[in-house]
Length: 282
Image 1 (tube, rainbow, N blue to C red):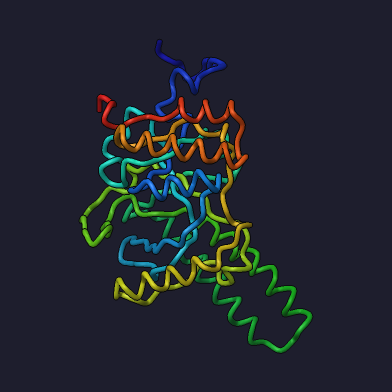
Image 2: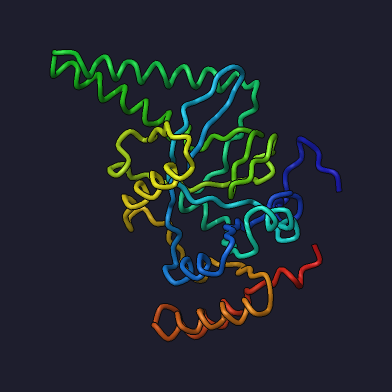
């Protein structure tokens, strides 16, 4: 049935017409990572190194704490399995929205909007720096706080930006012209800033081993208040590659039940939500 622009959308438009899933997936490349998420019933943010290219400009490399998800239907996950691993957890998009997850804003190389946004960010930063060095305490403090609030709002948007395509560096492999938009990424970025004073932490290092050390140092500052928590009934799918790993994840679910973290009913429901990649016709 073709939809007319002026027609009233059906009540369940998202179920019948949307190309997007009602589930968001977090993928990982080993059973230990999936086990850790289930045992804690939480995702722990990790600092990711980011950079944006646009026209002739390049942002400084910076770190943002985040948890990444993808907005795919189960039948579309094949390529994602190849890139990010065959272990994963799918949760309701309703849960994601309630917990401040948001789709990434993908920026093309020729994006005019990003140029204007970048200039606004630089301008607010320069004003903060200037006011911070002036001598009139009361007047300066009021102006400083006003501009700081604006700067922080700009940085919050900045944390959800990513190039539409560019160079991907992953596990010592470099892929040129990788289309990041194909990931259909949603992000969780903690709101609390006490462990993250400048909102974006710069990175001048080019040595991968030093970058890894820096990320580890930053991750140690993330407290339990910044964890992204879920209830077991928020889970829609548990993904494992094969039958052996299915047995392993069932053993973990029974342990969670024995430890008193979930009910008998939740235990049975979790086991029923296990999906084996080898059994999917992808």
